[in-house]
Amino acid sequence: MTPDGALRPVPFRGGGFAPRRLRFAAPLAFLAVLALWQAATSLGWIGPLALPRPGEVVAALVDMAASGELWRHLAASLQRFAVGWALGAALGVAVGFAIGLSSLARSAALPLVSALFPIPKIALLPLFIIWFGIGEASKYATIAFGVFAPMAIAAFGGVDGVDRGLIRMAQSFGVPARDIVAKIVLPGAAPALLSGARISASIGIILLTAAEMIGAQHGVGALVLAAGNLMQTDRLIAGVLLLSALGLAIAALIGLAERRLLRWR
Amino acid sequence: MDLVVEGVCQRYGALDVLRDVDLRIASGEIVVVLGPSGCGKSTLLRILGGLERPASGRVLLAGAPPPGCLNPLTYVFQDFALAPWRSAAGNVALPLEHLPMSAAERAERVGEALMRVNLAEFADAWPRQLSGGMKQRAAIARALVVSPAILLMDEPLSALDAQTRELLLDDLLRLWRETRFTAVYVTHNLAEAVRLGHRVVVLSRRPGQVRDIVVIDTPLDERRDGHPALIEASARLWSLIRDEAAIADRELVDDA
Image 1 (cartoon, chains in turn cyan, red):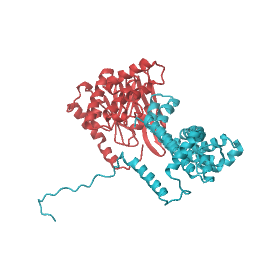
Image 2 (spheres, each protein chain N blue to C red):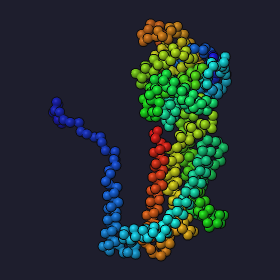
Image 3 (cartoon, each protein chain N blue to C red):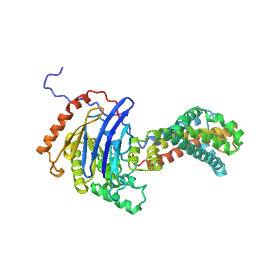
Image 4 (spheres, chains in turn purple, yellow):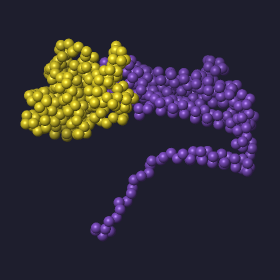
């Protein structure tokens, strides 16, 4: 016990739980991984068959870029992703809005979507190949189908989350239902749609790679598989890096869309 | 234009919310609906403006809306109901966008409405940037922009702090002097009731019934805090709602 009247400071108990972004940390982390990789491969901790040196991967990338092979693979993958994702997202948003806005659609379509959601879509690729042939259409269908369900569920959740007070407000001013959907429901659901886009884009990349591994001449997935079959680990790692870059680029695009569309938040 | 309420009852399942409400709101008059929480005030207001269907009874409009009126029954909501993705001006423009009107005319109306609530310089601000008082003033501008015949105000000041409430009350009185609007003003606040109401309709606890109607003759312009007539009206209203407010305070809340 301190004697009465003795002054002591109130102990500080706040602070913390507020991580900030340190500018130098990210490049350092990349450099550290690269250095470790370089050390492990050049010091012989890891054999050249298991993992190529960073320099070899870069050389493989440069080679493929020079021969035009890289762009062929990338173009094929990008096109499949763009078409498949756009088809699936458009359909998913349409169905999600229907579920969010109509009792009939909610009762009929929501259980269907929920049942489709857990199917690993790549299991349907053989079926789609039978339906649409071994060409592009079966790959579009697989990606679109995989994108559809998470997009529909995100859209439905977004529509459900729109402030009913705003809808009543618009009704009280006699705003027609179509305008309410366009001006209240759509922007209100936009944050959910964009986070749905993020999730469905990563699902789309997984399906893209898998579909290209199963049956494609070109595409990053085909590149990775062919390199693996020939034990060309430099090209294999190069392909994996391309997939990472593709994913990051798509995430950056969605981030840009978020910053532009959700400025009001 | 007058608003006539005839025998309105409302039930939610087994719950009686409103019973036999009869009321006539005359043009240019502010009718305050006062009652303890959960007495069905907001339900009554939603029924008055056609946002909810009564179980029985009806709400009628008498006479034509004034010329130029774009939305005769216009609400001002307690939570402002501003779309967060629209600027102040965008929110005020919303009720005009589906009407046949040139962009120039719309912009002019929006500018004028914002001017009347002293928000002209904040036209481009997002709602999140506005203070509570400014948000409600934007919402009032949105109500004024359609030249309403009757304003239906659902506790418009309840979400604001005491000082802001006082300022907005003055704004409302000034607007009434300028336009002599007709209003049904729902509140549980005695001070607002005696400052704004030509008549104060006291609703009883659930099921809400008209318990009494207190007429306050003092012109709105002469109403100041501490005015003897207001103190008297206030005391009378308090004696009418006091016991029910006490009972309402001891109830479990489970209504909308």
